Length: 391
Image (cartoon, rainbow, N blue to C red; front, side, top):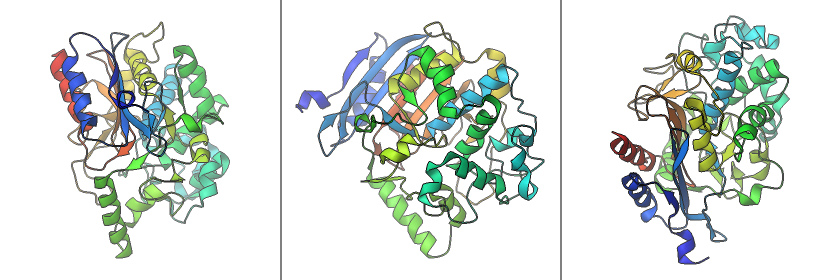
């Protein structure tokens, strides 16, 4: 690898130079890791940039076609699938989950509405008993464990971030309605029509192309703090939401742990396991808000229904603010996660991933990085530069 292969490269349309400069700053002080940025406006590509290193061990460059784990940005994709089913009249946000998934009625969950289940109000943010690693690789096992679990609080009465379990709740609704697992339905109605490389369940044999995730200093410090709290008997449920009781590491990744593993990337884990290029992710969000290459995924009426606020304010388990806001699975603009404004919908992801669409500005946006940080302004600073550019 030459120095130039790790330098920022790609395409910047005139007028977006300040956004490109913000991306340059995001990777300027980094060593051994990389990032990519893609932005679409009015259905056309205006920025496509990549730079840095995708794999520190080999020196492989982070290129425009490097796929990366997008963590909770996958929740945004799963929410698009649900909204698409609502648009087709095949799913109703106000219906009971049991209308589609009868087994979900166990342990007093029979009155749970779809809207509650997909907006972090299901009471299933963490397992009451430890999950094994193999449980997260087995779709039927994971969804059965959630269906049979007693909720941690009365569904619909409060919210708690369903960091990993959210994906099996949304994904099983897709499965029950369509007969297809979410990865197949995602390919059918999103990636094939748009011709992009994004997956909920990476195809076998493509793992070597994926960027290797690295735990940055601020995330390492946070994980150490969380582990100390756990050892002292505190913050149990928030930690279990991330680890599922030991199936995943608190950091979500390691040299051959968690979402760096091929078998985890190949499994369908719609709460955190999606893999995508930034180019693909931004194009998907563009197609949500405006016709892109002849494809419009959601119409304005559907977006209006899907972006009704469901969860905000202080959560059930004590977590310091500021707190995010969620609609029907979509993350909305808030003090905790700034997008472009009130007409933005998307989802960020662990370590600094950010992906969203904005209706008013007709923007599709994705920033991905394989250096995971807990205290991180890289994506936010790029969004701020974009806001100034389009003002």
